[in-house]
Length: 208
Image (tube, rainbow, N blue to C red; front, side, top):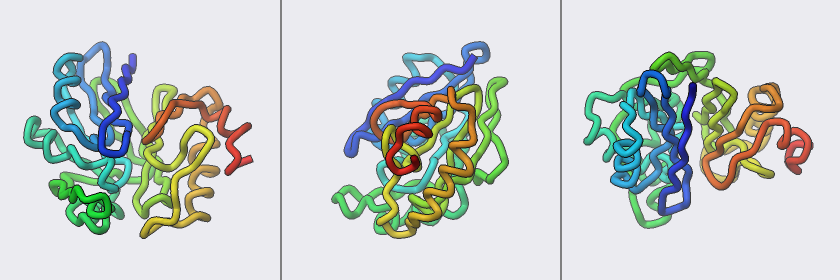
């Protein structure tokens, strides 16, 4: 059974997700966007073993604690889509310089490929390539849930006015890759509250 816990982290109230198998105790950390010690403390209280660190995209508020987690769990691979990999090490491109807290992440250990998957503890998350907010945005889908990063939110969609953003690409990513999922799929976005695919399909003003 999949277990999910949300950790809201500063400086931009980003959602970091801790996801693990109740049976095996193996899991992943999705979008550690800040407050590394807070995230590590939660992992250790929950008692699961991280197998991967996954970035849905390369903006600073989703990668800022990559370094802290890699320092604590030095053998755990860091994965991101190759199109956003250059953002990890460039505070200008990952937008962190703009809010005065420049972020330089470790380089990735591998890449999240469209149609590929991440497997841990008997669980499997499928990689859905959902660019538009950034050139390498991905969503991670499996076991009735999808982690959408800054692609899809409750009642909204990701910004496309940042460098590398593309409105048409963002909307087509959502329509082609996310709204085609089962309506009961729980959406865990990069900021704010949870929703479902069905709710967004019916009520999201950017999509109806």
